Every structure is written in structure tokens, then in C-alpha cells.
Length: 223
Image (cartoon, rainbow, N blue to C red; front, side, top):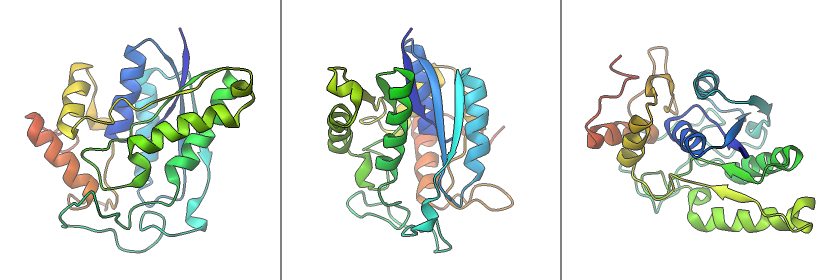
């Protein structure tokens, strides 16, 4: 059994990507980043997902990107709501270089573990237009991983697995349902209130559309 480091946010996508890796026979080591996100409820969800998946080890790491600012997810700036989602427009919820930072940390841990596989739940079809979710970025980081590590110098190769990259949100949900995943434990909302998800931010809209297209009720809303 091979080891893999999975970036686990507590959202629907990272849960599904991790479950796919587990089904493929990987032993999972999960990394969750507390980056100063306003939707900190996802951290509780990440812990629940890790328990459900039987993660070998779950590390929560503080890297406070709110120190830099530059995103409505790490500041008091309003989160966009009730807007048409245009993947060609980068919204204020983009956190500068977030996936580059996250993958770099996962790479460091993978090298220490002797693992060659990193799993990330990015998606380039039903998403909000983030540049660090594109296939070109994932391919470039995989190349970088070989150049940037001692193991790479010695001829070892790292693989960045992004199994959801070219799937629609509905396809992701269907795959997760087929794997027996309990999406009620996940959290997607960018700006949750005391009553739960706002239902109006990009993430809530994409999630709702995905469940509707998949013909499955969202168990987080309909227990």
C-alpha cells in the first residue's frame, strides 16, 4: 500500500478526492490548513471527514494568509453573493497563491514520509475561476516538485492527483454517492451565519446546482 498526502478542507470536493484515493489503495495522511479563513466551520468538517475516512494521521497547520489580506475569505470584505458565476472572472474570494502554498506544504510532508503522491480536490469545470485550479497549474507544480526536492534530484518522481479536475459538480456528487460518502458532514459555504450556510455565495450556488443536477438531495440541508 502506497502513502499519499491529501489536502483536506472539509468541503465536498476534498472529501471526494480523498475517498477516490482511498478506493485506489492509498493510505492517507491528511493536511488541513488554518489559513485565517472566515469560514472556519470547515475545520470541524475536515476533522469529521478525516475520522470517517480512517485517515492514518491528520495534521492541522497554521499558516495565516490573512496577514497578507487580498481576499474576501481572509478579511472583512464582503463575499460576493447572488452573482452570475463567470469562470473567466477571478472573484474576490480568490486567495492569492493559496494552492501553491498548500501544495508546497503537502510536498514537504510527502518528502519526509517517503510518499510520492499528493491528492488535491481542485476542479476546473464547476468552479469560481481561480487560476490555481487549472490543469496547467497542476502539471506545472508536479514538474516543480521534482526540481525542488532532494528525492527529485535522486530520480524519484512526485505525482499530483487531481481526480475531480475535469468533472462537473454533479459528476463529483454521483461519484461520492457511489463510494458511500456522507456529504452531511461537509461544509462548503464561504460566509456561513448562525443558522448555517448562506445559500447565496458562489460555493453554495455551485453545491446546490450540483446536487440538483445529480438528482440527489443535499443531506447537509435535508437530513
